[in-house]
Image 1: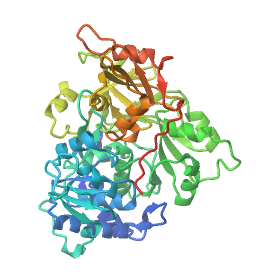
Image 2: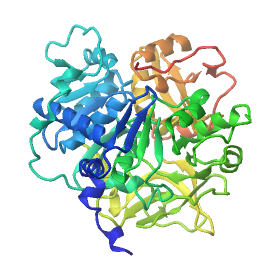
Image 3: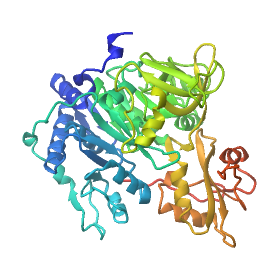
Image 4: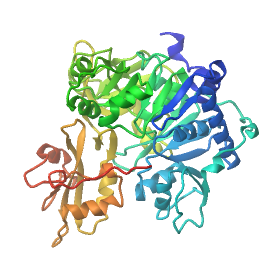
Length: 538
């Protein structure tokens, strides 16, 4: 094992502040970030804006080690805020701006943040929740302020535009093992958990040993949200490696190739559903007339060969999650469908049973992981020691995902042990959705499950038993939920039963409900013509 794989990376390589300063000094005029609104920032311009924003945050009391909430859509300004928080050695806590109600209340409380930077549409959601330590909100944009914010200082974006000459020095250098971010991932038997990630963790997740097929001159499309590692970690990686990013609001099939062309994108991370959408478009004569050279497709399914042959790009796949650092990766253009690759250098993996005993080759087992480099994975869940101990039991991080291996050593995903639903890249906590369902007075029992989607991953299904004498139309249920959960958590399928099946210990038999799937008596939102629109943050 090389010394590089046994030690943390140097500060100037993995800490965003120092990497950005280095690139701005060495090649100030090189382009770092572009956007579909026409803006283009060089490394020097990016550093200037980051320093101005960091100075403003510092004047508002943000200090090294403080958590700062970001509830923002994908924009260059959001990336600037992401970097500015870390420029102070503070902890960035990016959160889905669509969160509302108890989901929003939970992350505000768990983060312990005193300051948040938000989209204007988020301000109204803060009125009806307990705001814990939150005392100051900076709004990026204009909107009429709702009533009920009397104990909250609400400031405009101009408060973040300060003279960077006033930026005070750090109390101490930012170290690779310092906490860089808290990113919330779906809970299983409880509320969402805030993953504590160090600078070394985010660097290892997309660094040269994990994403080994990248070049330093690549331009990465940031269409995954900044509150996911598919957005935030790729931004961090580009800054550390001296690559560049193209920031757009989100994935759109109809303009994807035009965006690639106009913004000079060379590498993109695609969810399997996104790749399927692109393949379902009618073939065009110019399908290969673009500058894209490589795509990550996750999960791969059987998409590698058709995507490569049609669009003329190299394909790679990986297995990763918020807590880990790409332990499995494929070579370019894998041929085996559903393969997740093999362990990368510096990572040790095992497949184990429920007692953490290793299973035989070919038998399914939960993937558990260790890394040789210190701090190359999460260092726990924020303010949740019980979940941290459970995940890290016996000295291995437990992914909760079941795999099998073949004779060649390739890993294949089998199933999730977690009670979690994954819809088009969004991890949905069944527990959190069920908690909101139980708030409806007509519902006696409720189970939220994932059922296979024709686009890959899951569609959301809820199975209900109602109180005696009660009725509940699915459309009414959707109206009820739409004020309480983000659009992506709204169920497509609703099934009502006299009583849900239970185990001997009175737990709902979700596996049986999954096996039954969409039954003849299940209401289908799409078939009923009920449309759910994603919340837009213009």
